Image 1 (cartoon, helix red, strand yellow):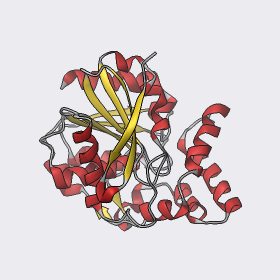
Image 2 (spheres, one colour; image 1 turned 180 degrees about the horizontal axis):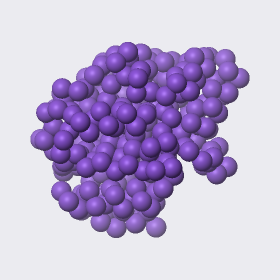
Image 3 (cartoon, rainbow, N blue to C red; image 1 turned 120 degrees about the vertical axis):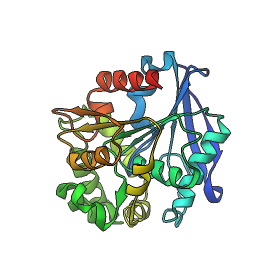
Image 4 (cartoon, helix red, strand yellow; image 1 turned 135 degrees about the vertical axis):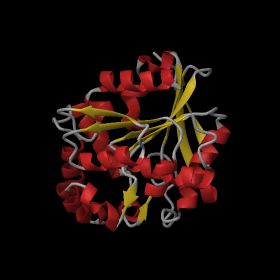
Length: 274
């Protein structure tokens, strides 16, 4: 069992970010970035796996999520998201980490790369990841997910809870085991509605950035993803011709949770290739 260490890093605008680390302190660092309304616990099947034998595994709670600070208005400026990643990389002395972003985590990675470049990065893994927000991305998001957003933005407890339940239904192809579902229900509920709305109120496209990338890139996509549609990864694959694409049949939006052994093997192979 890997020993877990946790701590705090001060990110953009003074926001306190909660960070957890495990694995080989001398191994290639992997910085895991969770998705919309989630937290670092989404990566339990990676942090508790044998990936830690030779990789340094770091997972952070994004601003507004998990144990990190949840200020009322600090989500629209991409420079703040970029500063958060930069702060974690510097504070933990992560040497050329793999930035592994799931869903909204892909947007945060792009925010960082736009402002700090790729010189300090060893590789990028995009997992069911979005690289656009706002009107340009709507064709890449599932209609059933979009239908949950009014409820996810609601401050009425019953409405919000029902929307989270439906959202969780969409995150995996098969029903989650009860333990995983109620854990996810808990950390989804910790994200205030104003944070969820602010995250989805941004409009951006990182196509130009992705076309310029030279670092190694891994694209992982469940073909039954109902939240970030496979067409998003197909689009990104066209923008990044050198990317290695892994298409998972009969898998939804959470490959690292639904088929962790396969995902971990693909991530390890990617890390070994750098």
